[in-house]
Image 1 (cartoon, rainbow, N blue to C red):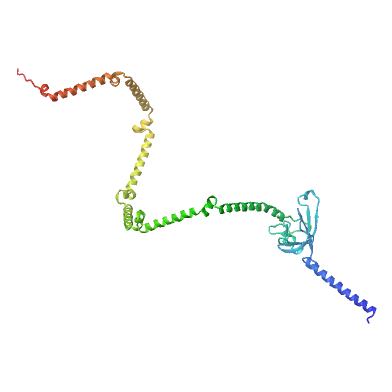
Image 2 (image 1 turned 90 degrees about the vertical axis):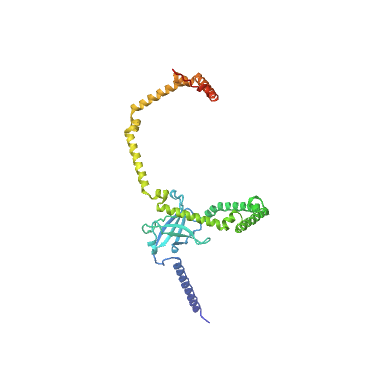
Length: 359
C-alpha cells in the first residue's frame, strides 16, 4: 500500500504534466492564431467604417487572401470629422508583409462566402505610396451591403413579377384564341387558307414545269433562251465595236478629235466671253457701251409711242388698222372682182373684143 508521500508525489507529477500540456496547447493555439510567429514584430493600423456589422475582435486581416494579422479593437468614436465613418477598427498586422502594405492601400469589409465570417481585406493592387507605418490610417473602399443589394434587386424582382403576370395574361389570351396571334394559332380557317394557297402555288409550279403559260414558256421553251443568247451576242459585238472605235458612238468614245474640238470650242467660248466682258465687237459694245444702250432705249420708247398711236388709230396706218371703212371697201372690191372674173369666164367675148382701126 503506497504511502501518503508517494500519493502526493504522483498527484504532483500529474499536475505538472497537465500544466505542461495546457501550456504547450496554448502556445500552439497562439502561434496558429497570430500570423508571423510569436516574436515577429507587429504594427497597428486603423481604418474607419460607416458600419462594421458582422465584424468581431480577432477577425482575420488578409492581404490578397493571405492572413497577415487580426482585428484588435472595434469602437465607435464621437467626432464631427467622423460623422459618416464613426466606427474605428484597429488592426494588428505583421511587419513580415510590410513591403506589400502601403499608406494608400485600401481596406474593405469582405465576407467569406454568402454566410461566412466577415474579415478585413487589404487591397494594394492600385497602391503606389510608401510603406505603411505603425499608427497609420488606411483609407476604405465602400462595398455593397447584402441588404443594400437586396433592396436594389427588389425593384428588379417586382418588375420581373409584373412582367411575368402580363406574360401569363397574354398567354391565356392567346390560348383562348383571341387576338391576331390567338387566331393565327388556333383558328383553322387560316390553316385552311394557307393550305389552299400552298396547293395553288404547287399547281402553278407544276404548270410552269410543264411549259404552260408565259412563265412556263419562259422557263421551258428554248426559243426564249436562244433569243436572249443572240441578243447578248449582239450586245457583245456592239461593245467590241465601241471599244475598237467603230461607228459614230465608237468615235465618240475613242476618237480624240471630238475631245479636241470640244476643248477648242470651250476655249473659243471663253475667249468670246472675255471679249464681250472687255467691250470688244458688236456684242461687247452692246453690253458695255452706255451710249448704245441709251439709243436702244430711245428707239424702244419711240416704237412704244408709235404702237400706242397705231393702236389709237392715228395716221394712215392707224386708220388702216382701226377704220372699218377700209375693210368694207376692200371687201366690196373683192366681191366686185369675183363678179367681174365670173362674167369674163361666162362671156369672154364681151370683154376681150379687139377693135382695129385703120387710118
